Image 1 (cartoon, rainbow, N blue to C red):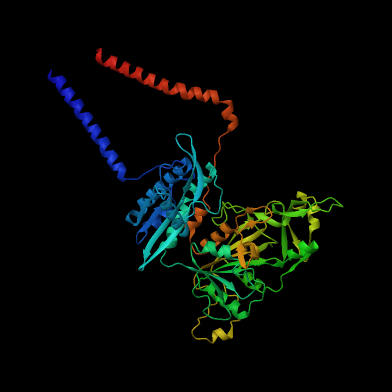
Image 2 (tube, rainbow, N blue to C red):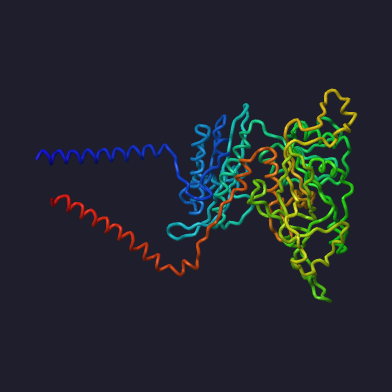
Amino acid sequence: MMDKRKVKRQNLLELGLLLLVVVLLNIAGSFIYYRIDLTQEKRYSISEGTRSYLAGLKDVVYIKVYLDGNSMPASFMRLSKATRELLNEFKVYGKSNIEFEFINPSESPDEKTRREIYNELAKDGLRYYNVQSQLANGTSVQQVVFPAALLSYRQHGQEYERVVNFFSGTISNTFGDESINRAIETLEYEFITGIRTVSRDNTPTIGFVEGHGELTQYESARFSRALADFYLVERVEIAGQISALDKFGAIVIADPKEKFSEQDKFIIDQYILRGGKVLWMVDAIKVDMNQIATQKETMGIVNSVINIGDMLYTYGARINSSVVQDIECSLLPVDAREEGADQPKWQLAPFVYFPLISGQPNSIISRNINPVKFEFVSPIDTVGEDSELRKTILLSTSGNSRVVRTPVRVSTDIFAERIDASKFPMSNLPVAVLLEGNFKSHFLHRLMPDFVSNGVFKVFEKSEKPSKMIVIADGEVGRNFVELRDGQYFTSPLGYDLSTKTTFGNKDFLLNCINYLLDDEGVMSLRSREVRVRPLDMVRINQQKTLWKMVNLIIPVAVILLAGLIYLFIRKRKYTR
């Protein structure tokens, strides 16, 4: 009898301990956030750069997410859940310096109050959408959702705010799985970009050089705006001023059309030798596209006005005075009307002078971005054997390209020609090159006397510290379309093609260039992060549908039955001895 009581007490004790362990684990689980990411590309894990930045925060970043509520459509509920999971993971690394809350802007039962809240949030820059959803009784209703968040951070006695909209650009009110998945995939990038913007202590300044016919503030507006998410952006005219470039972490020289004075060239040269970074976008030839539109032909000639080719040659790159043609190219509208017809018949035709160039898979700057659109781009040669310089090809043409020497006649007749791949035998012609290391002065042994005699300005003949520069052989790769309507300037997205209504990878590529020059590889790796879509094989699904239904139905039942039989067998052996 005592043995039975002992066994019973032992069983009760074990049960109590088991229940206690389960309760303690649940309590611990409510305070500890942890998950295991088994995907190959770690799509559900935040990057190392994000972790280290969050761990280094000096004060609290407060995040208000306005995507909450039980009545939201299922797709937005999924987006809200993914956002909460990401911010939980942010908190693991940012600890007490990451605080967040989820707010339902539609919580008030009073419609007037809700409208006032919507208007206030919209004024702050949060985008909202009217979406259709179905209630439990099957009724279809329209709802307002705010897939957005507001970040705030206090630094040096001043509060900084930044809006994070989960959907970039204007999209329709139809939100399928693809758009929601894309928003989920970019959450980390959008949030960490916002956090860096509001919390960065010493934000580098980017200088857009002007005074030599470079892209105007309107033509480079979209590039400048994209950079402003990470850096301070200013325009600067050198005008022979010794210290004109001192404050800039990097400068952009975009499509100059006038000569540089030797003084300006010298100041840029010394800026590089002091560790300054440069993004060069230079046209070696010039073509008047307006002339093609009006006269159906023009001439591509050497851009002899530009006098910085000698500098680039010193630094290790030569932009050739020729133009690339590539079968992988953009399309232009061409009038294909029949002879004698009055009305034009527009259709899109490939224009081999506008190549679409994909990135190098081994380059962190150009991999995993959409093709970059170029217009009349020239090939680049890397020159010199300086062991202190490293030269990397960032973008090069496809396997079906060729080079045309200038002057070249550019005519609409090219649209009538059938593209013959055998006539495009060249491949991998470089059009964008990264140069990094220790540079020698372009003015070696011929220093400018005005600056040498200036005791304040220390002249360098070689790099004081390593530097970087990127040379792109197309001045307009960073140009957005500008339209003047009713006295106001309107700009298209950078890389947007008016003919095909397609946005190419120009913005991402140029942002990556600046990020790399300024050692912001953490953000760059997020932008070019590869998330592979692995679609199901629909043919195999249809062929093996019945088989897998039976497998999923029979195997679980069989496993339970087998476990029961094993248990009975063990029990029988134990108690029949």
